[in-house]
Length: 184
Image (tube, one colour):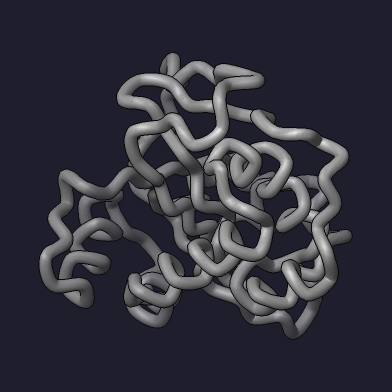
Protein backbone atom coordinates (compact mmCIF):
# COMPACT_ATOMS: atom_id res chain seq x y z
CA UNK A 1 0.00 0.00 0.00
CA UNK A 2 0.91 3.61 -0.37
CA UNK A 3 2.34 5.53 2.53
CA UNK A 4 2.80 9.19 3.22
CA UNK A 5 6.22 10.59 2.47
CA UNK A 6 7.30 13.55 4.60
CA UNK A 7 9.68 16.19 3.41
CA UNK A 8 11.97 16.51 6.39
CA UNK A 9 14.88 14.74 7.96
CA UNK A 10 14.60 12.51 10.97
CA UNK A 11 16.55 13.85 13.92
CA UNK A 12 17.23 12.16 17.19
CA UNK A 13 16.36 14.09 20.33
CA UNK A 14 16.23 13.27 23.97
CA UNK A 15 12.55 12.80 24.66
CA UNK A 16 10.74 12.38 27.94
CA UNK A 17 12.21 9.93 30.43
CA UNK A 18 10.28 6.85 31.51
CA UNK A 19 9.64 6.68 35.27
CA UNK A 20 8.92 3.03 36.09
CA UNK A 21 6.79 2.05 39.05
CA UNK A 22 5.34 5.51 39.68
CA UNK A 23 2.25 5.97 41.84
CA UNK A 24 -0.86 5.14 39.77
CA UNK A 25 -3.18 8.09 39.17
CA UNK A 26 -0.52 10.75 39.85
CA UNK A 27 0.14 12.47 36.52
CA UNK A 28 -0.45 15.81 34.83
CA UNK A 29 -2.06 15.09 31.47
CA UNK A 30 -2.82 12.50 28.81
CA UNK A 31 -1.34 12.19 25.35
CA UNK A 32 -3.42 10.43 22.71
CA UNK A 33 -1.00 8.69 20.34
CA UNK A 34 -2.44 7.93 16.90
CA UNK A 35 -0.40 5.58 14.75
CA UNK A 36 -0.54 6.12 10.98
CA UNK A 37 -0.81 2.51 9.82
CA UNK A 38 0.77 2.89 6.34
CA UNK A 39 3.86 4.56 7.85
CA UNK A 40 4.08 2.06 10.70
CA UNK A 41 3.84 -0.81 8.23
CA UNK A 42 6.45 0.70 5.89
CA UNK A 43 8.98 1.40 8.64
CA UNK A 44 8.72 -1.62 10.89
CA UNK A 45 10.40 -4.81 9.71
CA UNK A 46 8.19 -6.93 11.98
CA UNK A 47 5.00 -5.19 10.85
CA UNK A 48 4.20 -7.65 8.08
CA UNK A 49 3.25 -10.18 10.78
CA UNK A 50 0.78 -7.72 12.33
CA UNK A 51 -2.94 -7.70 11.59
CA UNK A 52 -2.53 -3.91 11.31
CA UNK A 53 -0.46 -4.43 8.17
CA UNK A 54 -2.24 -7.44 6.69
CA UNK A 55 -3.15 -7.29 3.01
CA UNK A 56 -6.56 -5.67 2.76
CA UNK A 57 -6.48 -4.16 6.27
CA UNK A 58 -6.48 -0.66 4.73
CA UNK A 59 -6.14 1.04 8.10
CA UNK A 60 -5.37 4.72 8.48
CA UNK A 61 -5.04 6.21 11.96
CA UNK A 62 -5.46 3.81 14.86
CA UNK A 63 -4.95 4.36 18.57
CA UNK A 64 -1.44 3.50 19.65
CA UNK A 65 -2.42 4.45 23.18
CA UNK A 66 -3.56 6.99 25.73
CA UNK A 67 -0.53 7.87 27.79
CA UNK A 68 -0.47 9.56 31.20
CA UNK A 69 2.33 12.13 31.33
CA UNK A 70 4.11 14.42 33.72
CA UNK A 71 5.12 17.83 32.41
CA UNK A 72 8.54 16.51 31.36
CA UNK A 73 8.60 12.73 31.91
CA UNK A 74 6.06 9.91 31.94
CA UNK A 75 5.06 7.13 34.33
CA UNK A 76 5.28 3.56 33.07
CA UNK A 77 4.55 0.06 34.36
CA UNK A 78 2.98 1.40 37.56
CA UNK A 79 0.58 -1.29 38.64
CA UNK A 80 0.61 -4.98 39.21
CA UNK A 81 1.78 -6.32 35.83
CA UNK A 82 -0.03 -9.57 36.54
CA UNK A 83 -3.46 -7.88 36.83
CA UNK A 84 -5.33 -9.62 34.08
CA UNK A 85 -7.15 -7.85 31.31
CA UNK A 86 -10.40 -9.62 30.40
CA UNK A 87 -11.54 -10.23 26.84
CA UNK A 88 -14.48 -7.89 27.52
CA UNK A 89 -11.98 -5.12 28.37
CA UNK A 90 -10.23 -5.65 25.04
CA UNK A 91 -13.57 -5.65 23.20
CA UNK A 92 -13.92 -1.98 24.17
CA UNK A 93 -10.99 -1.02 21.90
CA UNK A 94 -11.59 -3.56 19.13
CA UNK A 95 -11.18 -1.67 15.87
CA UNK A 96 -9.50 1.25 17.70
CA UNK A 97 -6.23 -0.33 18.90
CA UNK A 98 -5.18 -2.57 16.00
CA UNK A 99 -4.26 -5.73 17.94
CA UNK A 100 -5.13 -7.25 21.28
CA UNK A 101 -1.43 -7.73 21.99
CA UNK A 102 -0.84 -3.99 21.61
CA UNK A 103 -3.88 -3.27 23.78
CA UNK A 104 -2.54 -5.54 26.54
CA UNK A 105 0.88 -3.87 26.29
CA UNK A 106 -0.71 -0.41 26.48
CA UNK A 107 -2.51 -1.46 29.65
CA UNK A 108 0.67 -2.80 31.29
CA UNK A 109 2.86 0.15 30.33
CA UNK A 110 0.45 3.09 30.42
CA UNK A 111 -2.99 2.09 31.68
CA UNK A 112 -1.55 0.75 34.94
CA UNK A 113 -0.40 4.31 35.67
CA UNK A 114 -3.85 5.88 35.39
CA UNK A 115 -5.32 4.54 38.63
CA UNK A 116 -8.21 3.14 36.56
CA UNK A 117 -9.42 -0.40 36.01
CA UNK A 118 -8.62 -1.94 32.61
CA UNK A 119 -12.22 -1.45 31.44
CA UNK A 120 -12.27 2.22 32.51
CA UNK A 121 -8.88 2.83 30.88
CA UNK A 122 -9.98 1.26 27.59
CA UNK A 123 -13.25 3.27 27.68
CA UNK A 124 -11.12 6.42 28.04
CA UNK A 125 -8.97 5.31 25.08
CA UNK A 126 -12.09 4.75 22.98
CA UNK A 127 -13.64 8.07 24.07
CA UNK A 128 -10.44 10.00 23.27
CA UNK A 129 -10.05 8.27 19.91
CA UNK A 130 -13.66 8.93 18.96
CA UNK A 131 -13.46 12.58 20.08
CA UNK A 132 -10.73 13.38 17.54
CA UNK A 133 -11.65 13.60 13.87
CA UNK A 134 -8.87 11.97 11.86
CA UNK A 135 -8.12 13.25 8.35
CA UNK A 136 -7.22 9.79 7.00
CA UNK A 137 -8.25 10.45 3.40
CA UNK A 138 -6.55 13.87 3.19
CA UNK A 139 -3.30 12.42 4.48
CA UNK A 140 -3.55 9.15 2.57
CA UNK A 141 -4.08 10.94 -0.75
CA UNK A 142 -1.41 13.59 -0.23
CA UNK A 143 1.65 11.53 -1.12
CA UNK A 144 4.09 14.10 0.27
CA UNK A 145 3.43 16.46 3.18
CA UNK A 146 5.43 18.49 5.64
CA UNK A 147 4.70 17.87 9.34
CA UNK A 148 3.00 21.28 9.63
CA UNK A 149 0.63 20.20 6.86
CA UNK A 150 -0.27 17.06 8.83
CA UNK A 151 -0.94 19.26 11.86
CA UNK A 152 -3.02 21.64 9.74
CA UNK A 153 -5.07 18.72 8.40
CA UNK A 154 -5.99 17.80 11.99
CA UNK A 155 -6.75 21.42 12.91
CA UNK A 156 -9.02 21.76 9.86
CA UNK A 157 -11.34 18.99 11.07
CA UNK A 158 -11.08 19.55 14.85
CA UNK A 159 -12.42 22.93 16.03
CA UNK A 160 -10.43 24.22 18.99
CA UNK A 161 -7.33 22.20 18.15
CA UNK A 162 -4.17 24.20 17.35
CA UNK A 163 -0.99 23.10 15.61
CA UNK A 164 0.99 23.76 18.82
CA UNK A 165 -1.10 21.04 20.50
CA UNK A 166 0.06 18.38 18.02
CA UNK A 167 3.34 16.52 17.59
CA UNK A 168 4.17 14.60 14.44
CA UNK A 169 6.55 11.63 14.70
CA UNK A 170 8.33 10.28 11.65
CA UNK A 171 10.49 7.30 10.85
CA UNK A 172 12.24 5.77 7.90
CA UNK A 173 10.73 3.21 5.57
CA UNK A 174 12.88 0.25 4.58
CA UNK A 175 13.86 2.14 1.40
CA UNK A 176 15.10 5.09 3.51
CA UNK A 177 12.15 7.37 2.77
CA UNK A 178 10.90 9.46 5.70
CA UNK A 179 7.33 8.47 6.54
CA UNK A 180 4.65 9.58 8.97
CA UNK A 181 4.38 7.17 11.88
CA UNK A 182 2.42 8.87 14.59
CA UNK A 183 0.48 11.98 15.54
CA UNK A 184 0.18 12.85 19.22
